[in-house]
Length: 447
Image 1 (spheres, rainbow, N blue to C red):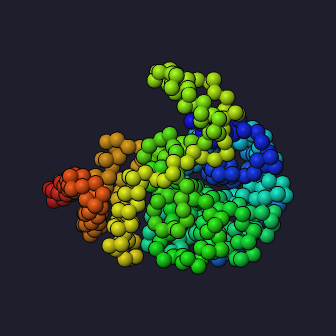
Image 2: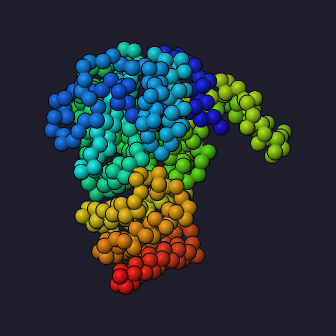
Image 3: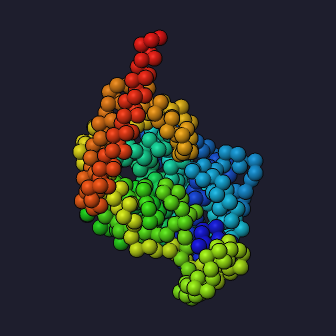
């Protein structure tokens, strides 16, 4: 199935011919992962950020004209330009956007990047303007920094987190100088920030918002927003999640989700590069007919060939799968039940314990942790063993509660055998940590 790069390379309609859509939103959410210092004109507004105790990474320099996408293609910046969990594909996306006649007349401006380890904040935003027609205010998702991921976890017990406050300030700062039609957009944490900014925006700005795209972004701490808070904008929020969503199903939001197909599995479904573009009805019928006439090996060969004319096949939306998978639904419900066991202070202790463990691994960024395999397991085993007794005990206790909640839900949905398997697996993990702790303690005593 085609993806957003195929879309950029083969759909040439202008925004006058085909209005801005969810695929366009996903594309710009990834361009927002580009570090724009020195290439994207920075936000000029000082007053809105005067009370922020952090360093603005972008220089508040003299006025500059907005940049076109092709002007961002400066190789001397590439070494530090791309961030996130998939910087190589973000780089490819930038080249494809710069070459696309659909995006050719669009410009980017008002770059703002804030990063503060003390405040546990990672925030960035930029605004894309299509002539005098509309603007797409886009918030960056979580980068690869430990600080960025810590702020995400803080959402489980703190409200608001610093990046959410900055998102509202940013929207209020840029909106007065933009075309009347506003689109608010973001992927992952950026989707959460987009939804937050739209909910908290003044009425005059809310009235200008045409649509908010929350692309697999988490919700909010329970009771953070009421039904009345959502009422003015909920019919304009589109939340898109992959079938096996992990991030987008976290925390609370009354917004219905639009579940889409992904060619990946597990956490990799979070990447919009893996989301599948819908095919039009004619191409779907042709695909079914082709499948009936080709053998399995021939189908694979055909799918990998360049014979498909994507310009005739691509639609303007992602392929809908109806609803999230049973595993995603199960994860969402277990996490909800688990968090209900703890108040905000206890949730904060859990988050601190987790990130104390991560810090103990010596990882520089989350890419080290997500590398998988024995190295990742070893890192966390050693981290748990090096934690303070109180942190380690609390993590183990929280892990047991999580296993119990998962077991109870598994019993309700899948039967006792599955539930017992989960409890056994959790017990084995706890035993590994206990053994590692005992070994470390013995070594320390001998020395």
